[in-house]
Length: 248
Image (tube, rainbow, N blue to C red; front, side, top):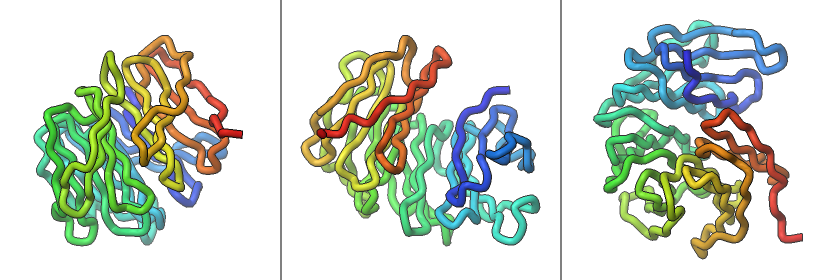
């Protein structure tokens, strides 16, 4: 079995994980014990996972390109499938939930990102590009989404109509696989096949700091909410913790 993605519930009470055997496994963070399992979540394996701000839903993506919404409102151990959405033609690579709104965005290897309405379970907007998308983020204000992929570009898009605002070169040598944005929306971090962590000024679209230390391709990066650290993981199994490079 291979774990493809992990995400904390927003209330911090559980850790949700996506597995290539088609199951979603939820663990208790204090003990590490398995709490419950969603069996047969996706026939082609679970490839991406996200949770809502109220900790009442899990959103999963599968290798078949389907997005599913699991309701945990009444009893987490008796979850049920609330909705399913299928427009992607390839595996889901990343899912992010929009802050303070019942909406999510999914990135797929088919070259599309789709913004979904989680009340009606329909597409609100679609972004298309000549790349295999690897990661997507919402700006904290929710008005823009940021994408990265195999074309080595970081792209900014309007969330309301899917139009592209800006595109910058994120790497000279390979795919950009991981990305995260600071809570205030001022800085963006990326990591990818060039094995370098980059900190960007979001508005200017320029790199302000770099970090080198990985010997394998970087798969994912994450900022701590208090901006004290950056965590990155790579294909060689390394997990590196970086002090956040504040100006002072």
